[in-house]
Length: 129
Image (cartoon, rainbow, N blue to C red; front, side):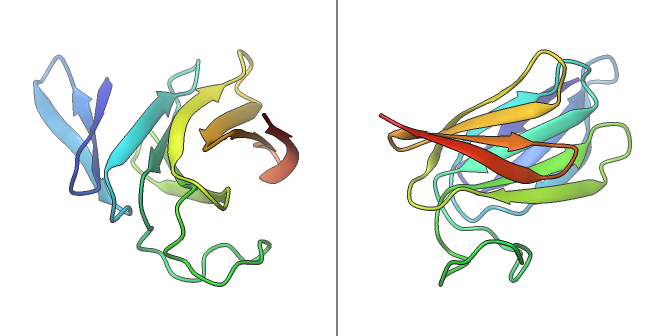
């Protein structure tokens, strides 16, 4: 599989052998700025330069506007199921990476690096340069 993100906020997962799109997601309103597959290729995470389209999905984070940048979305590659949203307020997502064991995801948003433990979907560290 490969994934693509576009300026209209769509994320697509492609089957390279069949040469066709198998899943298409429209959860971002802004340009898709980063995509990452987990090392096991079971999860895809996307990040964008703009707002999300899912209102009220981040119940544990306090912020005033769901249109804030710094939002990531996760999907299961196998069936296209939406898994979760991760919120890192303040700046657009510039890069995403998984740890080698797929337990932690990191995102660069502005001058900060945000880390989440995926088994609990808990933000546990913020590194500001």
